[in-house]
Length: 144
Image 1 (cartoon, rainbow, N blue to C red):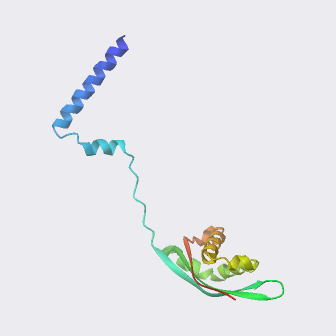
Image 2: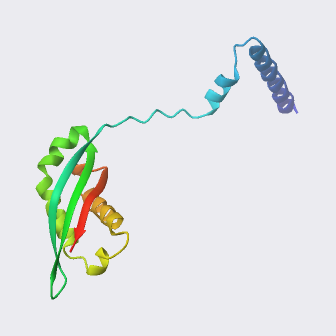
Image 3: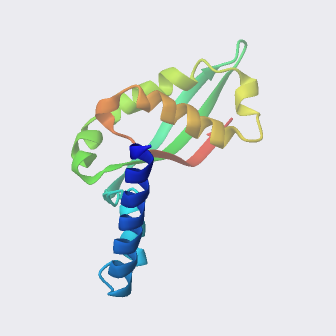
């Protein structure tokens, strides 16, 4: 019984003190919502640089004949990583050739094959976390 009485007295005291503080503009609605909502830090804006990978010629063996895929790609990486990525262009071209030279013809005859190539290439480059490639854009794709 004493616990209930003490709880009621504390609740009334808090309510009265909150009302008095609110009436004297010491306590505002904005300060109350700031206490209740979690504050998240603003995301840090990372400046990106674009690295061009031009004229990657991928031979595709289709059994009796060989086809070619010509790609131009833009890679977006944080500015501080641009020089490293530029020095790794031969590694990137090699991974592109190894990835797409074994694909079958149906892969390239898909209506959405540009998007499929972008996604596959992004997944391939994500396997090398040191490259820090944030986005991959295929700017030219010619399949013959």
